[in-house]
Length: 106
Image (tube, rainbow, N blue to C red; front, side, top):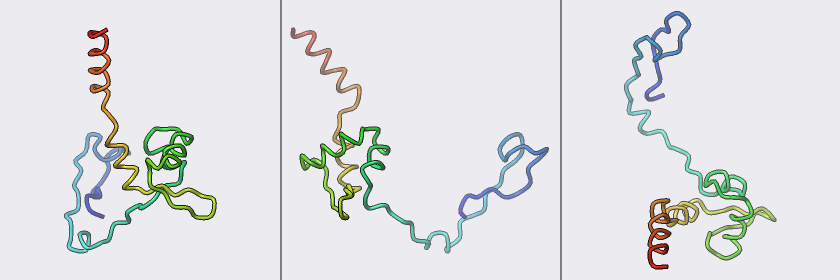
């Protein structure tokens, strides 16, 4: 694998702990190896990936804020939709600025 450590470990220490670590150079085979891309998440996986609750994920699907498909009764949340929704959320700083502005105007 690209970047895998090769060489010896000294005195039982893991690589990088007081010993020199060399990595194997990438080969054309490494670059041609297809990478599996996750196209959907279960509700539990989507919740874990975003830090939101499973209830919130289900509610977002119900309100069509997240695209989903169904495998029987299992909800499969579209990975691109989940990433897009997550990236649309305000950062903490934006929220703090809005709160500060509201306090000044009140």
